[in-house]
Image 1 (cartoon, rainbow, N blue to C red):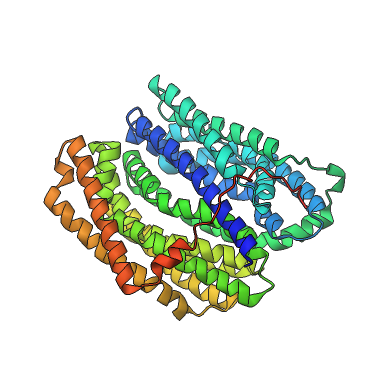
Image 2 (cartoon, rainbow, N blue to C red; image 1 turned 60 degrees about the vertical axis):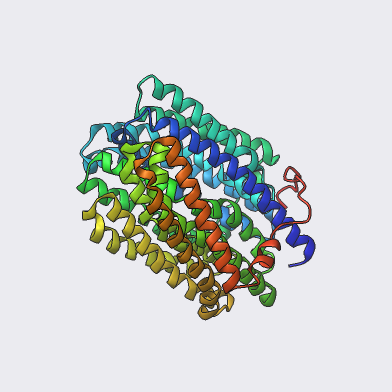
Length: 497
């Protein structure tokens, strides 16, 4: 990677990081309020109805975003064709989703879930309308999506949901907030992209070219999304809506480190890797640098979920969400394995090997369908453990796919991971030890907050010391990811070409 290109990618990552952080702070604050206005059962009903969104979003995109980002020629024609295709897909998905709403109601034994799912079905058309502008912004290294569009969407969700929830509308407040958020994102995405499709350029031939790449991405995402619905389906079929609510809010908290990686680093990686995939040595070096940095950053976050997850969740959401805290602890494997899977996903897309991506997510679906049902009898915590085990197993397989696509041996991946995770294990032990002395779960809110802060400080300090001992080059590697200058040029536009 040339210095200027590397700086551009890093600067973009920092801009994306700032936007994602603002988004998460706003989102977290909104849910802190909403968990005090809406019951766990209502959250669970909304989660059950939202299954329709998880699967439908995949069909709305159908791999077109990755196909546009990866493409290097006839971009105006490709973007116009994708815009027409995604609009038609959204118009088709709306009635299909509405028709499946009664099936969700039967599955979860709730007429309320049927009504919520029916109301949410129109959201899929709005989601389809964001695919092309999002892809164009990402391939330009324009980070308005992360810095402006998503924070605006979260603000719309927060205001709408909180106002309606305070008037006793329960799960319907979340439905209204979901629509408000997506409407804002649709309008702002098209405003910022400063491009309009030319319908006369759209063609069946171009659609076939895009679909030839997109079909494998679509198939892999279909498998991944199907796997992500197994937890709610399994837990909802054997437990109560309250159990689903406990699980979903625990998952929301535990997945923040993973989501941070996907929304910040992975957002930069596909357009970056795609531009160097034709230079194997450069491609491998960039992957190895990214992978080493990822392990160093993610390992202590996974460790802190185990050590501090329960008291931190009760502090944030209240004591009635105690079970969600144990869910957070059990999902440490999601962070550890999920971030590597995300990196592998971008590598396989950039290398032009989406077929390998499909094979990876076959493993995701199979392991999920085995692990979660095997452990769901333990309740929300069992479902979370099943997710963690499945994710780690898939990450091991994804390492093999990276070896095939990029020529990076599995032993090299293991060497990059071993020191960070050994240091993280020591950090978790230190944080647990401090927690046993302070007992934050039995203290008042102010004292518990101070205790959690001390536990986190002890954990991260221990990690820094142990990692420096095990890997003396780690500090220099972390300093290398800080760009010399950060200029907010995310608004610069480059047309679709």
